[in-house]
Length: 329
Image 1 (cartoon, rainbow, N blue to C red):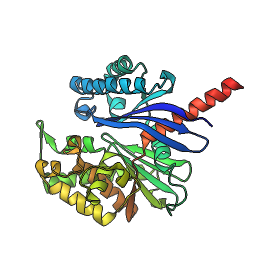
Image 2 (spheres, rainbow, N blue to C red; image 1 turned 90 degrees about the vertical axis):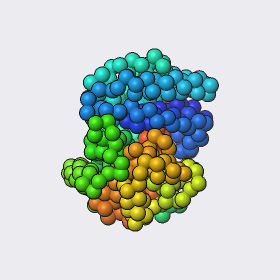
Image 3 (cartoon, helix red, strand yellow; image 1 turned 45 degrees about the horizontal axis):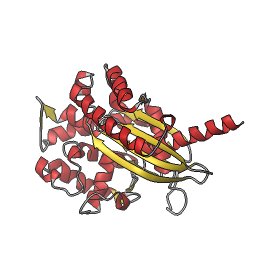
Image 4 (cartoon, helix red, strand yellow; image 1 turned 180 degrees about the horizontal axis):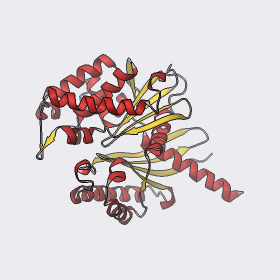
């Protein structure tokens, strides 16, 4: 089967990412042509105001214009470009401004998907490479810690249960650590306790839908988790190849979380693998991961660089293949 070239864009609360790839749905192979990320903090202030800030929108539209040029250079037709928007744009009163700006920049409109759709795409992207050779038990619990929300998805080859809860790293930071526009840095023990209580309450809610105790392998996705893996591996710079499918023990995650929660902004920024856009929110993200591991009893997390972005690409390629087959019929 001939590979299908697609462009997938994942726009979350904190970052916007692009993947241009050739996919063969018959053999299950994905070849990256371009994979990049920009921190745009689209969710800036949304939890407080209910609206997308003008400066956050402009940062996002600037990234869209950059991505549009990359997509043109690789010759991806518009019908194979899919832009998926998640938590922040679901919550915003002025999301029509967001939709209009994205369409003007890219020529395609964003799909503002539900938490359940987000969960299914994340599961596909994270687990499609885990069959055979990895010695991992099913079912998997895929945990995608985003900026605004965290998705918990349980499944074997297909999703059996999923829940999205509002405990993303940006939302937790803004809700508990930001006062009068200033970050409490490092947070006091009382503030850490408040974040922990918020996370635990959300996990209680999620557990009513997702039987967390059934999971046999915990798979962690997105920037908070991959950054923690980079720290655990003591990498001199961010290296996605080294991070992908690495395993981090719960004791190491606990150690790193404590370090991040007690560090200053400058100390976190000096960590070699730290992206500048994650410096302020990484401690909250680490705490979300740790509480999930404690809740499920997971002794390690398998870290995946492939997540909802790859799931979007797979779904786009599959839809294209189905459309081609229908036309031929």
